[in-house]
Image (cartoon, rainbow, N blue to C red; front, side, top):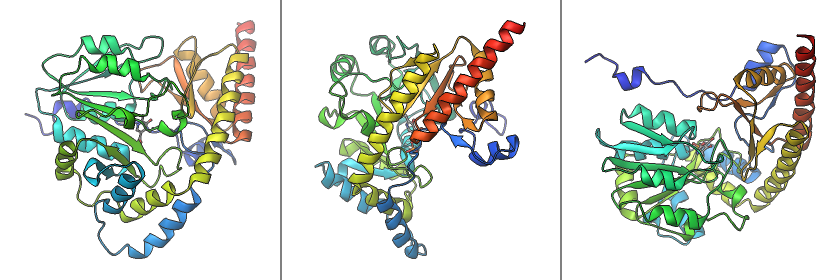
Length: 370
Ligand SMILES: Cc1ncc(COP(=O)(O)O)c(C=O)c1O
């Protein structure tokens, strides 16, 4: 057996979106607009930042494993603390789930081109990772149900989904759930919950609790705390009790926990962020539509554009980078003909659409010359 297990050797590392600094350096640009990682363009919740500043003075003490945040979340969502876990982002909790529940012969089942963070984590465990194709860019829940076998242990569903932005309804989920044995754990990733929650078709999983479902949410998106690493989950107390045995004892950090508590109290920031996002979604979707580019209707803070082919994606991403606009090509997710654009400020959205028009005009010019 080699030192590095084959499942790790063959793994492609997580490719994060380009950083602003690296694009500035490479293209010699003073200003770069990053619309690549579904972050909040307004920055962080001010109440979260105040809480971070206060908590920093306790940095010489070890954290308490997220106890206070769990208490606050339990009160906010009318649960027992035993049903709540906090971690270093929802990916921190996903990592604990993978280490807690998966054995060597188990299988993971999800959609094609699922959220890349989950793909990397699940594949690093070395178990069989199986997928079914999208249907019209939505999870094909009936096809997923058909694929469940005696080895299936974890099913990963993101609602809204990243990178497509699409949702499934409560009725669709319930129909699917009828086919899921109790020994299978469903991870219901609701990282974009806040953006979708006012859509009457969107089911808040807090209102359809099942014992083998764990809901994950995050402060990285609408609360603007992606760099702080704080997320949380809700599940049956047996699941949480076992996850707490495996979770790193001092995760989340004291500062991250304080940020989460501060953010939860900041309803005004939440409201402002939602309004900005709704405007941004309209501008991006209409802008893509006017350019004749297929944009998948989205319930999150990003939109997926479907281009004619991979070369088109590469050209568009490169043209935008030269203008200082960073979007996300989806090759690493498994969708080489698609790219994803996060909503920015009003000005950033406008800049992005204008840059797309120039890129489009350049492509037409190149095609007519050839
Ligand atoms: C579906 C989904 N889940 C989880 C995450 C990661 O969240 P966190 O920053 O809390 O780890 C993301 C981030 O892009 C995401 O899109």
